[in-house]
Length: 199
Image (cartoon, rainbow, N blue to C red; front, side, top):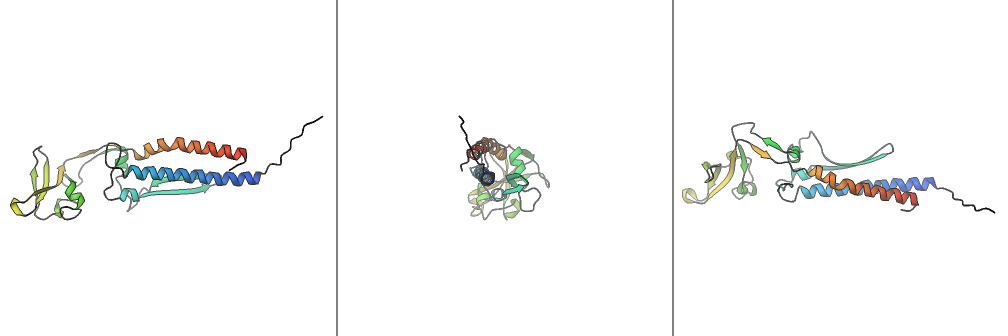
């Protein structure tokens, strides 16, 4: 008496299935990582998030999927040394103390200077003719303009500071911590599907 079980393994089919599932897994993971980073850069400035002002930081996020030998890799990144990429990405990720490179003060734009309510988005107080410096009730040094002459409404445009501490808002570190378990789960599902011969 005997019991015989035979199976002719189709290694070519399994290899093709694995190649396709690896590509899907990496592509889905890269999509999720990119989506989370862009969402965090657009969700309003707060202790852990950063609001959009110019959109330059969001538009500098890049993605790449490539094969090197048996490895298929995907990454989401901001390119290092480039004229078009913002240098402040690292400042927001890790935090930093910002000091002026020229002059004594940093001119930090307030709402009217950012929104264009006082004549357009500006780089600094020098962009506004007729502006002047004054102290707020809290003692902060401000720069502003008056609408309608000497008795018009005062519009503060900039607060001047000798240094500013930017808190860390780790978009990339938090995204990595969130997405790594999802990627591992996808790899487990992919391995199981290939082992079962279904996809």
